[in-house]
Length: 135
Image (cartoon, rainbow, N blue to C red; front, side, top):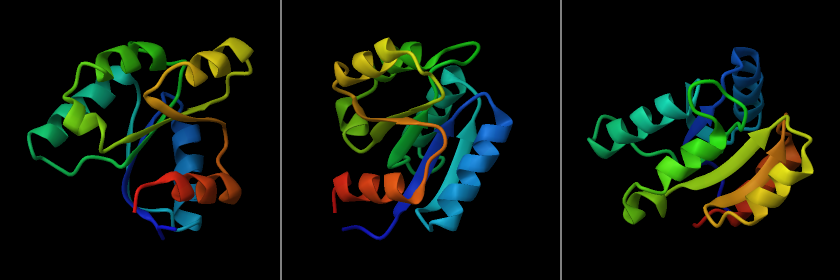
């Protein structure tokens, strides 16, 4: 099992949630670098900056579903337009407070989504994610 990931991107409009998630990730020594954006539009801009070489691609994107400007599902639609070589380097995990069973089912039916977690992450979930990560 891998010890930690190099870079994580948190995509969530809730600054408090991002703060808490970052604390949990740091406490568990899960990632070297943690970046945060507030919606799907900013996440796509971030990924385009990565593609241009401004910084490394995240290995994991933790994606909220309910956000202004561009929600998680719309982000996934646009994300799928990125080069497949880029998408293969990223594990996309929904991290939401949604209790709507339709969201969980839709996530299962969406091949790009590698996991569906409810806020807030915990040690067990992070270890589970590390187990599915490529070496």
